[in-house]
Each structure stands twice: as structure tokens, then as C-alpha cells.
Length: 351
Image (cartoon, rainbow, N blue to C red):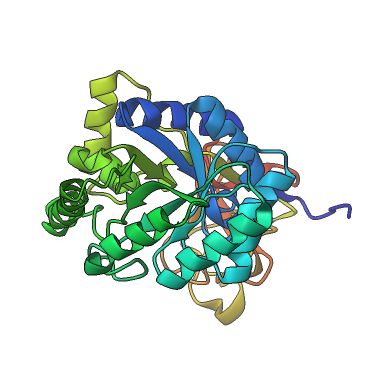
């Protein structure tokens, strides 16, 4: 379908590749797993996956079987980890497509073994076991892990690839929970080793863990938000800067820009009130530009009250009325020379 409304997103895949290379360098010798769930955090899963792999990611991770199948349909053959245990039907589809299921129930292990038999795989199907060390979302109880490992080992159709867990508060560097989660996971690995059970890999770190808690990097780090150019929280920002300096890398680059073209420009006197509710008078005479973006597109209704702005001509132009469903009104200087067709930037740089 042709688009006539002048607004668009720009996704910089070269920035994804750069960010993956930076994160791989920070994580080394651990490997980088690029998290491309939720359609690559909204940036397009196939494109971001290819760029991350080109930048040095060893594998990919998604939340849903459907997301993994979409990567396969796009021709991406790299290892893809499913971050949650699918339904039995989902496990069957995942195994058939060469995806790596995460399992954390006895039923899941049994379903994976059946799926491997149906797929008639030439060798054992790789699976990973997730254990709950404190996030309390999904994962096996720690005291169930040995039994699940034994169940995987008892199936000639399955091969244990890794055990892993997920950090709950890694974006708060001073919180002791992260260290406790790491202690629990390493204790489980030692317990398995004492039983002569070999675990090929163990992973725990998300983006915040990889940047703020180096001991959590272990064999693999799973990076999502940083892949798209952002630190996961203000407290992690300074630690990211320190890691960049340590490895001699350039800063992460934001991947997404959100832009539109001005559709109308009108001049209004000081004191005039605009948009729904006529909430606030103009402080001075100005040009008011209409930008075709609104809350239906994802601009928060609270953006006006929060002092939101767009960039036009390399200058901040504040909102001067409530966000409507598909349009914004912004104030520009009388000397700005703003005209219909000028570029407006809601997210991203300009000049």
C-alpha cells in the first residue's frame, strides 16, 4: 500500500552491526547472543539479526516460536535460542525448524524428546535448561535442575547445550541480588560437576549484567537494548563508558530515528491557546508548525505536559498544545523560516 502521510522511521543497520561489534568486544571471551525478540525490539528482526551476526554475534535469541520461524523463513541459519519453554506443539515446530528450545519442566523435556523423534534428526537435538535464581518469572526451581538434566541425558534424542538464568535487577549496580543470583547459578554448576555431569555452557548476563557486572558474563551474554544503541538505565551509563574506554571502542549508536514533514505553518500572537482543552497560552508571538504524528502513532498523551519537543532546522521546537490522535503542534521562532515540507525529528539527531 502506498503511503501518503509524511512520517517514517529510519533504522540504521550499520549502527546495529557497530553495536554488536562493541558488545562482542566488551563481553570477550564470552560470546554474544543478540536478542531480536519483539521484531528486533521494533526495528525489524531479520535485518537486525543479519547486522548483529555481521558485527560478531555468535547466535540469536527470541521469545516466541513464531519469531524464530520468521527468522528461518528469512533465510537466517544461525543458532536461534527460544527464551521460554513453548507448548508441546510449539516445541515440535521449533525442533523441525532447527531452533534451540529452552526447557524448565519435565513435560517440556518429554515433548522435546518426542519432537526430536518426529523430526528424525540425524543427531541429538540441542536444548537448554533455564533455572530460576531470583527473577521468579519462568525457570525450574533450583532443586529440580538435577532431575531435568538427568531427563535430558536419559533421552538419546536430546543433547544438553547449556543451563542459564536471567538477572532481575542488574540495572541497579549496587543491588546485591545480582551477586546472589550469580552465586546460586555457579553453585548449581558445581553441584552438577560433583555428580560428573558436564554442562557445556552457562549463561546469565543480560545487557545490564554484561556492562555492569563483569563476573556474570560467564560463557555467553544476551544483549537486547544495547544492541539498539542504549544503556539499560541511567546507573549503567557511566559503567558502559568505562567499558568502552577499557576496550577502546566508540560509543554505542542509536539505531532508530523517527521523522516527519511539517504539513502546515501559521503565525499566532502571544496569549493564543491551541489544541484540545486550550490548556496553555503562547508565551510570545511565534510560528506554529503542524507535524503529522500523534498518540495513535505512539506519541504519549503526556508528552506536552512533560515539556516535549521536536527538532526542526536543528532547533528544539516545543509542543504548544495537547497531543492529538494524529498531529502535533510545535512553536518555532519567527526568524526560523520554517516552511511546509521541512523535516521534523521526534527521535534522533538533526544537524
